[in-house]
Image 1 (cartoon, rainbow, N blue to C red):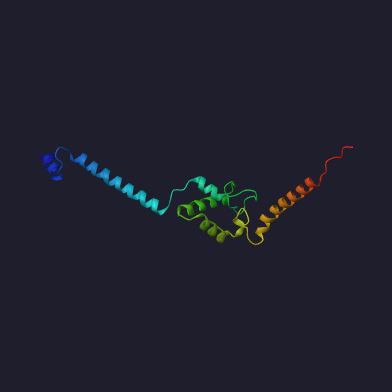
Image 2 (image 1 turned 180 degrees about the vertical axis):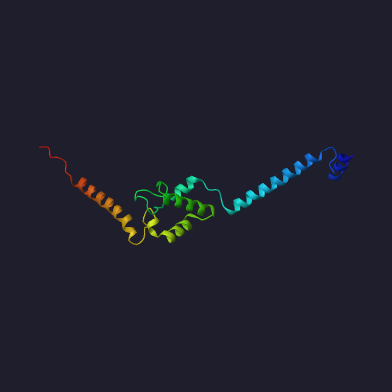
Length: 151
């Protein structure tokens, strides 16, 4: 008699209270998980480690050898910088915003390549000018050569 009364109270004839409660709990957990995942997604986007390494290759952490970037250096400073980049990407920051944040925190020395402005333009312009001058010299030498006289 108790069982029949409890089934009538829930209003699901033919189903036990346990199966009804399990179904209700399943839907509550499912909806909570779905909403929670949406909230987590809204708070921060999913970032792959490859994306972190791609961005980390643009920076040179302090304390690492000059030939290594934050993506390849195994020092603690490089690891910390990779984690900071991961956190900034998860917060939804763009590449230019991350660059601005890191440069303001560490200075221009954090950049693995000098910016193409000011004195840094020489780093980009001198090799290009040397290649252009070499091409001009090569063309002048090739044009100035005369075929051997047959005589």
